[in-house]
Image (cartoon, rainbow, N blue to C red; front, top):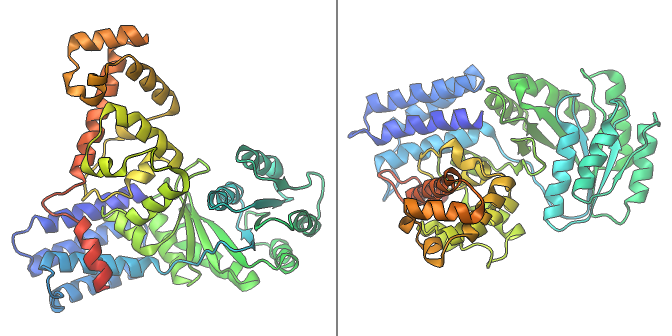
Length: 438
């Protein structure tokens, strides 16, 4: 959903950028393109009409702020209206707290619990996880296995049918923990028994936050689920999962925003790292190709030492083979490469799918190949001729195709990084103006 909607929005804005004059016809065409993109992502028709009418009215009637051109002004309006569409984010603090997770079966609640544990762990907090899901067979085994991978304790009782009792024991066990996460059971529908159990667990745990986990595939129906859970336990935040695999993600985001619950995180992948803090401005900025350098910097601070990666070199487009391995290794610790690249201001530039396919196995192979290169070759890959490719292949036990693949990947990434520094219609510079003009 993010790729499809983001691509459609960027295409609409690129058309605007190519216009010699931004007149009523250009604004009308932009409005139609935006309507099409939002409707394809299952955003409510009434909301789509309202937002497109607002954009059209403001673009034609409002005077651009001092120092801002008409194109930039219209883009700023699009940005602001899309931010309003997804609503405000729910707060997340790092003080000692208990967080209760609710949701229907199949929403991704158990996996999300482990992802949340990882999120708080990376912030340097001590985490305990309680599995109060007594309904689904294998729930405790699944959660315990996920937590074990990141060295986080998980409490549960396989044979027990007393979710409230499990919660009490778990809370007692984790008294010294700074964050305790409670995974509750889900059903296929909002049954009375499920609601009553969650109410009791909420009372016993005195949870500071009660977050609802919703599958993005629900689309606009997510609003009903959010309302009903809110009536029961006072939902104060929503996590929308599986945003990578559905065209209905726009419907789920806008539906939840309509309930005023506030979105806390979005899940956009299968790995334990694929959970992102939801910030409306950053989210829309990335959809429009403007990047999110603030979030990228926060991720880097969590896991990277300054000597691990030369950020200035990356932004200048300096990307030698010697640098590349160290930088890929460091970036790999920050999370999925696709997610990281979306945080850089690409100005609508598309990165080939091959660029994201850097597995740990490939990185290990690349390292062996680079060990067979000379200092000159590592610093300046352009000197590597066909004869050198064969020499490097023999020395590393690889094939010439493997060496060429490495060189091709390097060129692709270097070209992408150089492209970030500017384009005819540079979206990056707008972020500073947006910050002053919102």
